[in-house]
Image 1 (cartoon, rainbow, N blue to C red):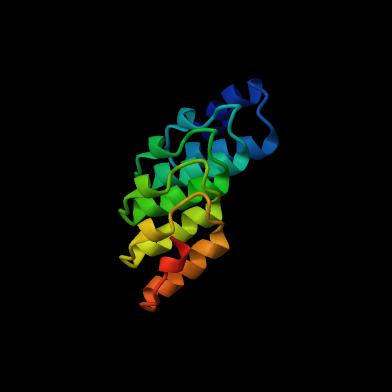
Image 2 (cartoon, rainbow, N blue to C red):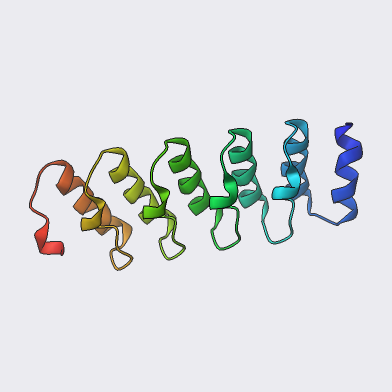
Length: 141
């Protein structure tokens, strides 16, 4: 299929140029762009979904407008690494909190000590690093 011809459908739907660029990249890679070619996604969210589709990841875990593109990236990376993303794929966690939880999962740390929305990401980082260095972190619980 001609990419330019296929892109015309999305041009006629009045997608902005930046979103059209992500749609074009998906078409060139023979990806089902209809998964992300939706007005509720901005171009950065579209990119994260496209990258997941290119890596054959089940993007339904994060292809929702409730996540911003940085949260989507943390979930996508966790899926690539085969982590239990259910530990952090909650919209109440900002992307930095998601990243700290992901780092803990990667390092087999007991994330239950800090994977709590009431901790900001810097607190999470401190607790995670303490756990990595076998420091008593019970003061935080």
